[in-house]
Figure 1 (tube, rainbow, N blue to C red):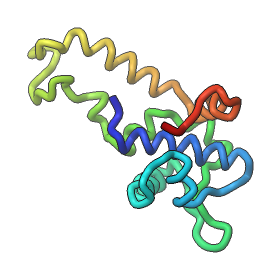
Figure 2: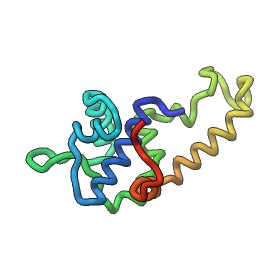
Figure 3: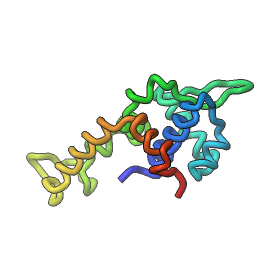
Length: 144
């Protein structure tokens, strides 16, 4: 469903939020190791997350990546998906057809549309705070 890049971006965001909730900043090497992603790939993902104002990069001694705790309840999963994959997940035909629409549907359009709308709603409503809560309680994990 999500691109591999988006999967890693979500995992990185949750990990950075977890560390930020403890008042810590995370470096690229640590983040890459914790989410089991290659370092150069992680660095590119983090650049995109910084550009989208999802995470903050602090340079210099004691620097690293962080998310302001006040942002946890406002940061939605939808923002991460859009920052990494754009609107394709929300707008694209499931069969990859360019002209697919309600008036000119592909064979799967009417089955897929409700699923896509439900996914869109779920991503729009799910906060980092919610995901972080289950992660910090040990109810979920980030490694493969």
